[in-house]
Length: 118
Image 1 (cartoon, one colour):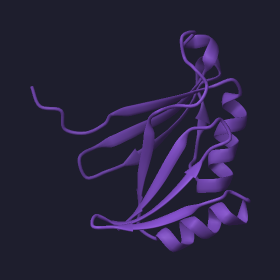
Image 2 (tube, rainbow, N blue to C red; image 1 turned 135 degrees about the vertical axis):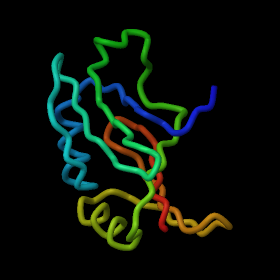
Image 3 (cartoon, one colour; image 1 turned 120 degrees about the vertical axis):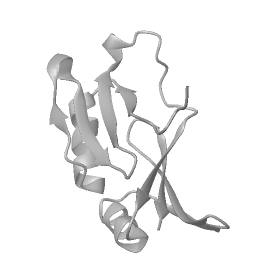
Image 4 (cartoon, rainbow, N blue to C red; image 1 turned 90 degrees about the vertical axis):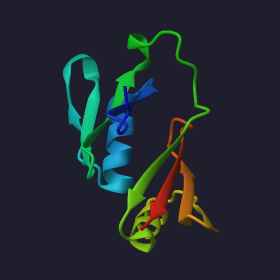
């Protein structure tokens, strides 16, 4: 067995519709509503699609607030993405690493994210 890529990642939220709207505004991710007030968007990669979901906490009762997971999204224009976040009053910390430039931030539910520039 070989794992080829992440097929899906689900964030758990008390307000999935509100968090999906935040991602639509801050990162232009086109979330759509699915059943049980779960929201999904699909990100295309060379290996295949990655499904990013936001689920109500009631569907995952043991889920705690915030997360120890860092979601990293690869972007083609880091400067434009950082500007968009800052235009939405999101504090962003930039960092240059040997793997390239990153921008770290937190969503309204306390999930840590990073944007990785190409």
